[in-house]
Length: 516
Image 1 (tube, rainbow, N blue to C red):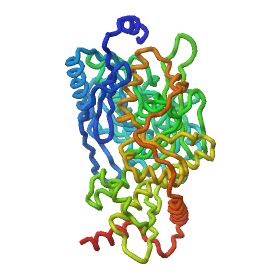
Image 2 (image 1 turned 45 degrees about the vertical axis):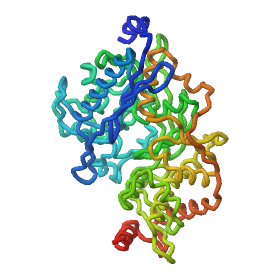
Image 3 (image 1 turned 90 degrees about the vertical axis):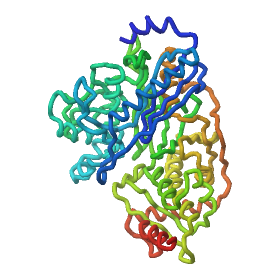
Image 4 (image 1 turned 120 degrees about the horizontal axis):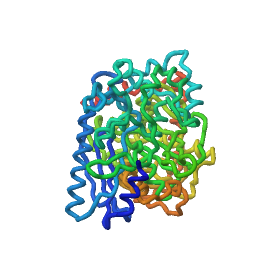
């Protein structure tokens, strides 16, 4: 138990402690070592593969991901040894909403990981009688095929034997990395499965029946922080979803809002003790602490919005124009605004929740689209989804816009995008100086748990957020571009597009023909 371990280990703290953050992500596994002063001393990554065997199926090999984490632990230990330092504790963060099946007491997996991008269960949620509103009211989450609930059902049905465990990847990693026998899940990941009652803090029988999941086969729920065993002699003290770990990092710097721009654009507004709710937005668990000697574990919450268009839009720009991600911003800046693009690429999430939206491009008929117009239109497309979230939260009085709104993640390196968001909202925005926020947050949370720091005090810190670059509102005419996009969006969703609009696929094909 943690308290027994704490009394034996934490009273003999090493003189040069380092703290390991492991981050298992969509495209790579990453790791960092954090000093006691909070400085990143070492960082490494290992690319991982994704398999898409057919439409809606997005899978990864559990053994490949596990071995990448094991390699990173070995490399971290080698680095620490070369510096005469000791890795005092570790934190693990991972992709949220994945699901897999594996045999008890074995690395033998009987399924791939069905990742958060896997939508094979969408048909279940599109039934006319599916109780979407009930699920939303009970969980604070909108039913989505990407979340784990329906995928757990599929894997339970495919693997009915009691010697097969069906759970989320954290349960698999914990057993294999620490040698633990217990079948567990971290509480915020349990909540995101759509099967967990956050008020009662337990698996919910009604929700399990809706998703056709056997409650008795679900794992034991554990808080985010506490002793989870040892990874190569390193105590594992923290487990978080990647969005939560990245948020932990920026909250530690004084932020009370962030927009994380990666494969998915994710707006996060944290709160401690009190759960924020806004209609059509998601209200979920940020983290839960281990029980103190008296009373219940404490909880922090997060209000979420976002867009699925983020990574897809920028991948499309790079594919279409044969340019690198670093070139997208300069290409977009040379566009002349010949098209307004409404391209969700996948389902629309907040605030509309449309599973199969129609896309459209509003064209200036006087001339053809240039490569720069394409880069501009698709970049603004992402920005417009972000702007809609920000303005919605401002109306709810949930944003302090006197300070720059923090943006992080790889796509936040796009200057054109952040300047466009600032111009259209009228608010300053900033690119945070935190690099690799998820692995940093995992290491920092382990460090705080090791030091017996009350995690709720993160919210009390009087800190000034550090930014690499701040963008202030400038070109007011860009607001007209956002207004045109809103009109186009409403026309597309109501199937009343004007004649000068074309589906994105046609516009793309026309561009290719002219390029050839």
